[in-house]
Image 1 (spheres, rainbow, N blue to C red):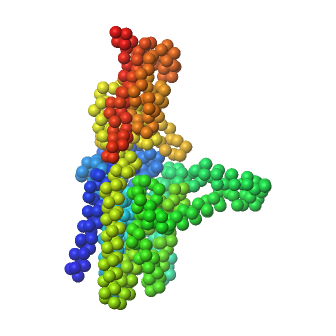
Image 2: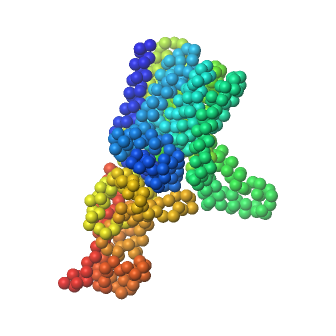
Image 3: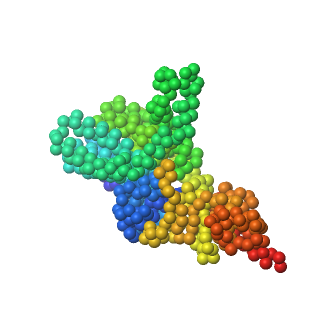
Length: 586
C-alpha cells in the first residue's frame, strides 16, 4: 500500500516538473491569447471589469474571439499573488494539468473496481499522461482546453462513484458544467458525453431523484453559459469557425463544380453540389483526420501554437498498446466499455465541425483516454507472455523504446522548439515594449504596424497598464465583418497599417514594423520636401504640414533591431527625422 502511494507521488512530481520547469524559455514567448487572458484577469482584479469596461462578464470579448470566463477568473488568484507575469498567467494550467494526473489515477481505479491489477493499470495511466507530449504542451501554457480536460475527468470520476452513492452525481454534474465555462470545444463534447451518461442512468433503472440530481446542476450551468455564447454576442465567433465562413472555399467546392455539368442549375446538379453536401464532406474529412496517424503520431495539427515541429500528439510507442487496450476492454466486456467507446467516437466532433480540422486544442477532450487504453493494452499483453524470460525481454524492450520516444520529445521541445517557433509565440515583444517605453519621451507619436496582430495587448501586459486608464482612453477601430475589433490608439501609440509612401515623410516619430514586411528602402530613406510633396501631405492629413517646409529633408534610420533567440530579426524601430532646409544648405 505504501509503495503504491509512493509511486503516485513520484509520478505527480515528475508530471509537475515537466509542466513547470523553465516555462519562461519554452514556450519561447507569450502568445496573444495568453496575454489577453492575463490582462483581463488583471483588469478584473483592479476594476471588476474586463478591458471593454464590462462588469464581471460571463463572456470576454477580447479581440472579438469571445473567451469563456472560468480561466480568466481563476487567473485572478495567481495574478494577485505573483503580479502580472507569464508564469502567473500559466499557473492555473500548470496546476490543474498536474492535478489531472492524480484524477486520472482515481478515475481508472473506479473504472476497474474489483478488477485484478487495477492499481497497476491506474498507475500506468497516470504515468503515461504525466509524460504525454499532448498534455505537457497544453499544461505549460494558459490553455483553457487543458483546464476543461481536468473537469471532464473529474466529472467522469464522480459519475462512476455516483452510480453507487448518488450524492456524487451532483459533483459530477457540476464538474461537467464547469467544463463548458472553460473551453468552447466542450460546448460540443460535454453535452454529447452527458447524453451517453444520461442514457446509462436511465438504463440502470435509477429513480427520478437520482436523475434529477445529475441533470439539475449541469442544466442550470449550461443554460447560463449558452445564453451568453450560442444565443449571445459571441455567436459571431462560432459562425466564423465553420467551413461556410471561408467564402472562397465554398465558391471553389460548391459553385465551380456545378459548371462541369451540362446544366449547372439542374436539380441533380444542385443535389450533388450544395452547402449541405459540402459541410457533410468537410465534417467527415475532419473527423477522419482526427484519428489519422499523421495527426496523432507524426506531426500533430497545423496550428503552430498547439504543436511543436516534427512531433505528434502521442508517442508512436502508444499506437499498438492503444489499439490492443481498445480490443481488450471490448473483448472482456468491461462494464464501462460503451461509455469509453462513445468517448472515443465523439472526441473529434468539436474539431471536425470547424474549418481548420484536425485541431489539437479542440480534440484534446480525447485525453486521457488513449493513455488509459495504452495502460490496459500494455499490461494485458505483458501478462499474456507466459515465459518469464520473454516477458522480461518484452518489458525491457518496451521500456527502452518509450525512453527513446520520451527523450526525443524533450529534445524537440526544450532545444529546438524555442528556436524554431519563437516568432509565432510573441517573440521579441517584451524587448520591444521596453525599448519603445524608454524612447517614447523623445517622440510626439509612435506608430506600430499590423493592428490585426493585436500588438496593443503586449504593451498593456508588460507595462501592467492601469485598466481604468485604458478603459477610459482607448480608441478602437469598428468591428470587422468577422467580428474582430482592433485597437487604434492608446497611450501615445497609434496602431495602423503603415502606408510607407506617406508615413516616411512625417517627422519626429517612431515607426515600428515587422522586418519581413518592411520595404528594403524604408530603413534608410531620404526624401526632399518639394511643393508637390508638401501639398500632398496637407491634403492627405487635413491641412497639417507637421512643420515641414520646402527644401527640408526627411530621413529614416534604424534605431534598433529586435532579434529572436535564433538571431533572426523580428522588429525594426525606425526614427523619422526632419533636417531643416537651412541646415542642409550650410
